[in-house]
Length: 435
Image (cartoon, rainbow, N blue to C red; front, side, top):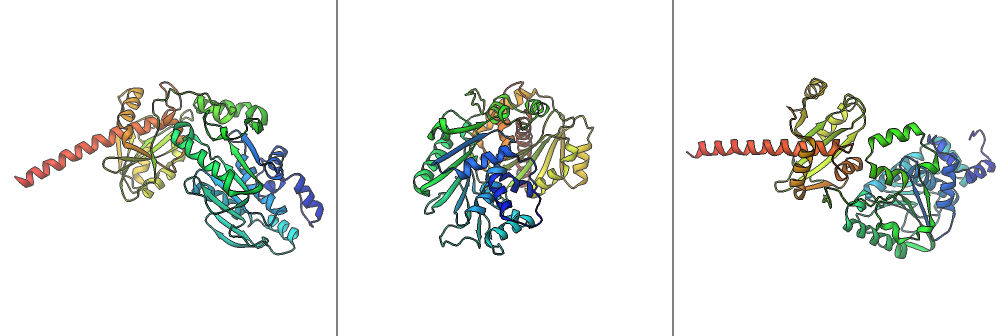
């Protein structure tokens, strides 16, 4: 959409094809398909608008970022709530919208539409109030909420729930029930009468929160329907994705597979100022993931963070160094492998305390034994990366990718071995002092 001098026809064109706002903001992958999604979610005044779309379909970009901007352009007094699994995730989306309003062309469009110089009156974490909102309400133009906090006392014209049903609902019955309770509250007490609640995402379990809604009203867009991903990309994704998760994330099918070795994981808030240790499972040829695991020692419990990267570890070094320093890790363990010590040397040069080792234990035996034996002692960071967690929880023997559970098991073994050694040394020192 080229803009020289704005006219009402430009607004009409945006009203017809809202994905053009995304193109203005640099989201060039958005198309007429995404305009149809935006119209369905934002323009239909059904009680509930439900849409499932596969991963990498740009559903969040189109329906949260661009969709909200589009809706505000034609409904300036709207009170909109973005609901995600955690407040942190929802607040990130609000931040992206805030940054969008620093785009000169977008501002020009809004200035023209409202006849004023559009400004953000309030712009803080998870909240934006624009000066074009004329109604006086306690709710602002856009507000972020997470399922991890209670949502009470507020009322909105539009609520959009984005990926509130996730991997955690697949692996935890308690999480499924918690998600359902919040969705019930949103439907009955938080959305104003006659207004719409919108839910977008993917299905994860046959008894998850999607079952609260009329399944016949869910618009579904899998990879075969959107045609967004070409055959080569799909094949590459299949190589790097666990089959059950490919079915969920790209075909929108729940396989109902309950044979996972590791079930009902514990989650919690990461406790800072603890002794932390790190393990790197490095990859070089693109067929495997790099996996990075951080363990925080709480004595009787181990807190776990993890990250995966589908590229050459040489391109991930700065990220590794950043996480090492951010968590004040005492050392990083790396297996002696095909790069002949290049990665270890590189990390050592950047100031990391590197511990090298030779791997001799069978991978499946290591993972199934060490993680299983320590499972009740582990809790995962609330904000752990989903792809890392997926690999751990959907681990099966001879199923790729398995780099995250391999890294976790290796770190548990290496940490426990060093802990015993350190305890033995401490005991010896104490004996010498005492006697």
